[in-house]
Length: 263
Image 1 (cartoon, rainbow, N blue to C red):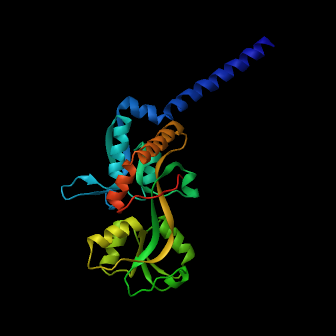
Image 2 (image 1 turned 90 degrees about the vertical axis):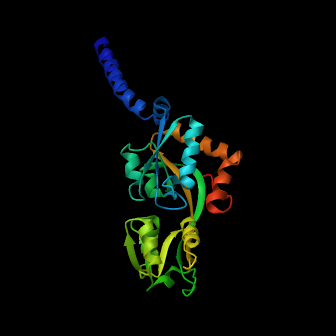
Image 3 (image 1 turned 90 degrees about the horizontal axis):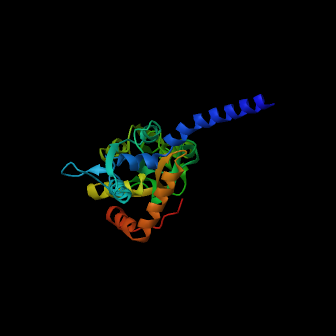
């Protein structure tokens, strides 16, 4: 009886010992604080979220939010450039600690990663010239050529709901926008922040909303199991929402402060 009990305790101790390293590895917040450096995955080719200015310096809404996050955490910031397609794989491969990369939350993505409260909100839609009538019916997009970044939420939604449109798919958002600007496609699918920037930078090109898909809040993204880090990020967003710094960033990059959902 005693021997059996000892064997049971030994087995329990072995299981606990195996669990300890995993628990330690999952505490990215403490790892960041100990290292004194926060690695943030950002887009650097999609204004106004993230891009390089005339001096070659990284800037944009997400870039400035990352700077604010590192400052409030009291650590050095390391910006790691990602693309729309590589965002989540880079996070899962531990190449970055968090993503601040205009990421929208979906049920499919939530199976892979965890999302913070929203820090911004944009509209997803199809944009084009005045000559194309605006519509509330996705079927009216049939026959029109639409440039879109492949594999994105926009691409997936439009393919399912407007299957008769003619899609010109590209590896990233800048290429899709460039296709519209050069006349390779009649319209392009993107979020309202990017469309606004495209319009500002190309005053001779008409950029009007032709079809609204839905609102799409942006979230900071972390790996599953990082509850301490996620709690800190939500507190960070709440704190900077109260002190007005988040609204100031929204005004700078989107033209006005935003009312965003907490999730």
